[in-house]
Length: 245
Picture 1 (cartoon, rainbow, N blue to C red):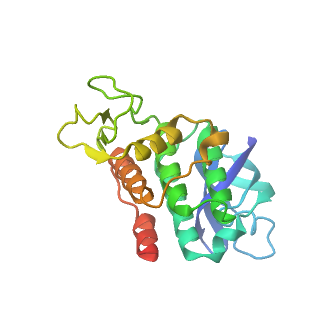
Picture 2: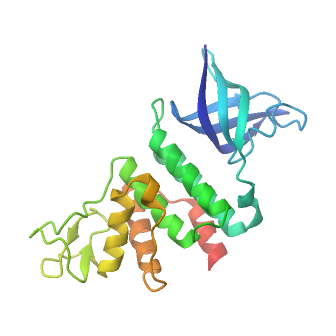
């Protein structure tokens, strides 16, 4: 049988003389792997469409033992990611997170929208990559079922004090009077930014702004929380940090 869905290329592995095993994030089937026959040959119709970060309308053939790419109507290549090693490494980190966390064999519309929007802003230099990283991390955690509880203090229900305390393992919030061992002190501005990331509509998600002073704090909170959720280290993240430091 064949099926057609919107998809973006997350990873490529050369197999045999000229074939590719491609990992996609698809709108209707989540993360899936498919063979692209002869795609390593420059003149093949799938050569361009199955390059990293390429997004389009893909048609797949699902056989008894494997899925194959049949054709693609290519929409976007995110070519701007190739111009800067920091942008490229961050985009690869996004892809690696998606491969690890996004659903398989079921729809992944929200994850696909999040990734596409993040790559669009990153490739076009339309948003500070230092903000794109925590936006992607916290929103992805929320989409896969690990939304942190940031509505109010878990003890007394206080909506805001300055500072507040965020537990990077449990995702829970406490106020300055109720904070517990293990929770990390953050200015209210950082907590407000985190609330914006997890609760806002997608159309408003990337309007987030934050002072230079608070960006590193947001980065710390989002990264530590997500890595606690996923329980895995990512080589792409290590490389991104090495490039940017």
